Image 1 (cartoon, rainbow, N blue to C red):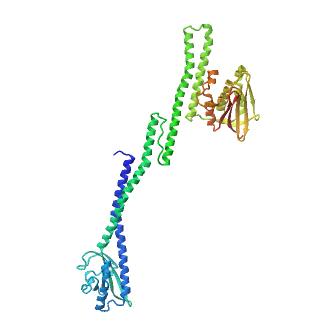
Image 2 (image 1 turned 180 degrees about the vertical axis):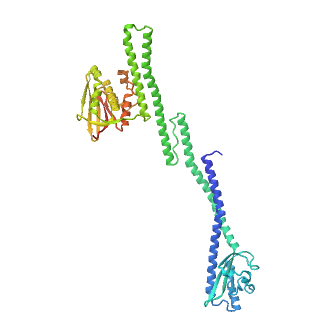
Image 3 (image 1 turned 135 degrees about the vertical axis):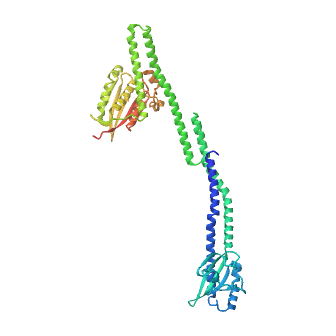
Length: 469
């Protein structure tokens, strides 16, 4: 039998059934027998007390009186199956409910000298007096502070055993009726546990084969439905990741192939003399530019990989964000001059200190300003500003260029994503700048957002923690 949940449930069911049956017929039987024996002893003591209280003054008066009293005990003997002896203080049996007119001429002390000294005896077998083991109790009778004799009651042990067997048979019959019910309970447990697991296992197999559209049957307990939902969600995320990987490969192939094709083509043309000597410097500069583009692309990929593996460590220091903005803006002086763009720097205060990684924040500013210049029209301006709100400093980079299409705003943070306008205007972009910027800001536990209207302009805003100094 395979080591499955069903086989384990069957084994547990059989083990439990056998264990309960054995327990009932061994230890349970012993408990029941002891309980019935205790009840019988209490009954014998009660009857002995009633006899003693009723006949205390008449007992042992004369033989005729004892014979009459013994005849009155026959009802106890008949209906309760309790044999009554009246024993004098010397130990002689003077009356017997089973032999009213002919009590046994026996002195108990001659048979067992300790018999009358105890209150109870089990499995009593006094020679020639009983045909089977008896349960006996001895009740001492005192009258006027003197021992007058004893009332001895006997009940067959077989009766107790018979009652025990009857009760145990009833319990076993009940157990046999309970046995199928227990099987139904185990089947129900299997249905609510194993069946949903099989569905989830099938879903896992389908997802492993790439069938991400498979929908598992969400039945059973709420925990299984939650697990089914979690697996379905995971499959969707894996599907997105699979799509992302395909797009990643396609994009990186495209972005690497273009400069490599140019480098190879121009290099071969120079080598075989297709390009004249006086024109070689021009095409060598193109090769250098394409090489630089490949270098930026490689650096960007390595930067993103460090964030993915959580290995990008930040060097948090306190610095003046206004000064960093000024230095970064100066590096775009040539690009702004070519497109006749004015960089307008507006600061909340002359000095604004924040706690962050200088190099990483400067990289964010460089990417955002570079992006704004690409998408700004000639003879326009770009506004870079800082604003304080509580313990946060908000840095804004706003242009008045072509803007971002509404359906593309959520995608601009994706790696390698470029709008159609971007591909038309800028062949040198890697599509990684905004992804890197977002990773850097999030690694500082801060936020970066974009507000854009197509044809009006775009504003990027990110937050930093204000320095306590």
